[in-house]
Each structure stands twice: as structure tokens, then as C-alpha cells.
Image (tube, rainbow, N blue to C red; front, side):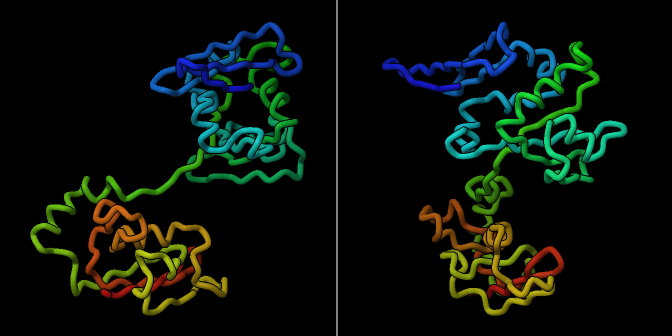
Length: 258
């Protein structure tokens, strides 16, 4: 599939059906600058909530770099149905038996990546059984394992933090513990404010390799300097003393008032 933009600003999708998919038609919808391309054999599954519509949102897929230029596999979350095992899931998706499939216990699903060469086989298995079209109610739910990004430009306003700051309360003198995946001590919002760090996870480091702990520390009391947007990305209590530690799955870093 190729997405192009014409002189009038409208976008157009050119679709080349894969092997065995001749006769399928593809409906293109552009709304609010976003282009969705929905194949005819996906209509029933999308309408029944078995397929994530985000799988066909071409604009969002490109923005997340889920295109051929940036990746050779599509990350998916597949609902676990009765009797499903990692092996049977591999059979459904066309993956090799040694492929990496991670079970997500909290939502009874599996996370996996389906390579370009396997996508056609996966789609055929999903929409047909013994040569007959699968009933939508019998198909497992499949979601795009989309990328997410963290932001502080809305959350502090949603809980009324700017009003509290205006009243003179910034958390000065309050000690707050942050337990997470570590902290990037060189981040502008935290630089010079981490006074101690402990690793209780056995990893040998308190560095934040995931980014989550640094974000959480900034939620607690980041200065907002790193974003260049002042208070719009400031943490809830920018004057509070903070410390954190790295436990079995998290890191604790101590942060104090500058």
C-alpha cells in the first residue's frame, strides 16, 4: 500500500492485493486528515469488535513507524480463547514454534510480532476455517500493540495543580518516595536533584532503561525545564523532596529540592 497526497491536499491510498486476495475490494475513508483503508473481508470482524480498527488506520500506522521502511513485523495483542496455547497461537499466526510469544495474564491475551512474510497466512487463518468464513463471534479479538508516549501537558491541569501553585503551594519540605524503573539523572528536569539511588533489583544499575521511572519522577516534581514549555510540563509538586529506589521491577532515586 502506498499513501500519496495530491495538489489539493487530499490523500489517496493505492493498494496492491497480496497473494490469493484478488477480488477483494478496499474502502478508503479520509476524515480529519486521517486515512483508513478497510478490506472487504475485515468489515464483519471490525463491526463485531473482533479486530482493532487501528490496524487499518494508515495515518496512525505511519506515525508509529509501522511501515515497511521502519519495521518488518507488526506487533499484535491476541485474545486468549479456550484451549489456546503458545503453540496453537503460532499455528494461527503462521509463526515458527520458537517464536517469541508473551502471555499477558492481566487481560488473558498474548503479545507477539507477526512478520511481513507471515501476515498473509495469519489473515487467512483469522478469517477462514476449513475453507469456510469464520463467524465473527468465533474469532479471537486482535488489537494493534500501538506505541504510546507520556505527556504532562494535561494531567496537572486536570487535577487542578496550577490553582494550587497560584496559592503558593509547591510541595516545599514534603518528602516523596518514587519507586519505578530508575531515573535519568542527566535529564534537565532532574539534573542536580538526585541525591541518592539504590538498586534492589539485582540489575547492578539504577539507570532508567525504559523511561517510565524518569517520567514518574517528573510527574511528582519535574521542573518542566526539559520541555522548554515552562509550567505546562511541570510536575505536581516541583518543590517537594523526592527519593526513589530500584526494587525487583523498579528503581528508587532520591530527589531533593534544588
